[in-house]
View 1 (cartoon, rainbow, N blue to C red):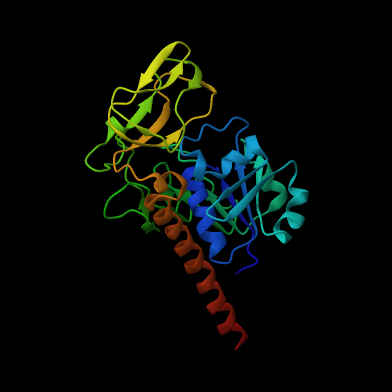
View 2 (cartoon, rainbow, N blue to C red; view 1 turned 135 degrees about the vertical axis):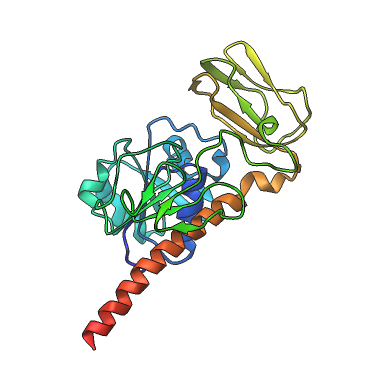
Length: 274
């Protein structure tokens, strides 16, 4: 199974948690796709940063931007994950991966992908197994976070951020209108309620609560109500630079789905050979 070619759509926080968990579990042939201008908020733990910086390292695992999938073998030999800019998933046609994971986290219905790889896994709302994908991994915080679903779908998107130390929507910074972001603070800064964190054009965006600035978008053009930042009321700076419990749990669900499918396939093959 270590030679499985795994393609992950998306390279944001959750997709990175998935790719990281697979990589440290021994799966080293991984490629991820991203859009040309990623808007990851928790970008210190997102391989999407490779789009801007050419490379990104998260908890000791390195990902590098590549211009073409023909570079992947060399990249994998160096022990890195590949990141390719490809919004439409065209790279999948030439790669023919054994596993396809959709971790874009768009939170809405998506086109059925079943058959695009021997194993197709959808993360979060918008997928139904076994009709549209082979398995769905629950992404909503709570009792079922990370659960693998083989018949059904994940819980619907609530629009409400998960609770951290009793705070939900208060900890998330959103754009007051469309415009260009100009940041004032940095990820890892301790902030107080009322502090200006960034501007959208000339409009200040202030913290509603005190804590550590765990996530902050790059200076890019944004739309109205877009997520711009994340304040962690627990105030622990180290949480800003390590994968969250949610991303790890989702990564564990994807790992479970892969092991379940290909372990069973190996058992069947062994029985046939005997």
